[in-house]
Length: 213
Image (cartoon, rainbow, N blue to C red; front, side):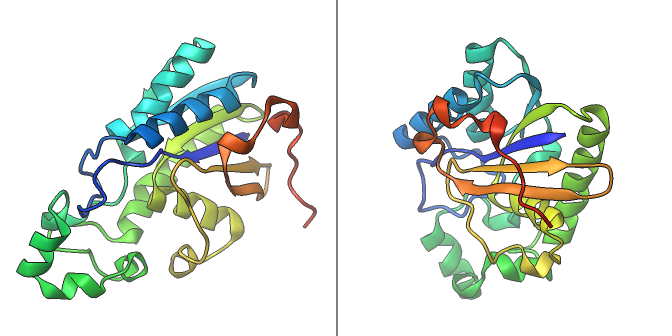
């Protein structure tokens, strides 16, 4: 299976702590969603999956309009849940718990961001379950997934052989594209954190191949 793994486009409210809060896309994010659809519209796709959060679904809608292939929204692809701080303004949450100012995504490997939230290993469990089903169902085919920052990092980290503590050592920008090929015994990353707006049709993602081991 060849996986075209995108992060959703830029969001409107960067002054919030948002994980599973349904932060709407900005105008730039909507344009990035259009770019995502433009990049994949000439691929012979077997399936398109998004998380069920609106910022991910937007790209799925645009792909569906472009290629006529319905997308499937799967809650297992959601971003990590940040607990009580999820969707709360940073200033308000920091006033309630000043320790949040020093929290990083990497620290979520060991503890949730705030009470009621997920850890990275908990997110990884659901994302890996989705991916196992996806690779089994679409062996030898091309699939698009519109994911989120942490969920994408788990998928890429597993393909690169990284521990969960190492998945924050690379970038996942808004709207970026990653390409992973899954063989019988291993996965190979062919492209990471690319800007879809700069990928022209003549660059043909059909020809992207992973590097040799």
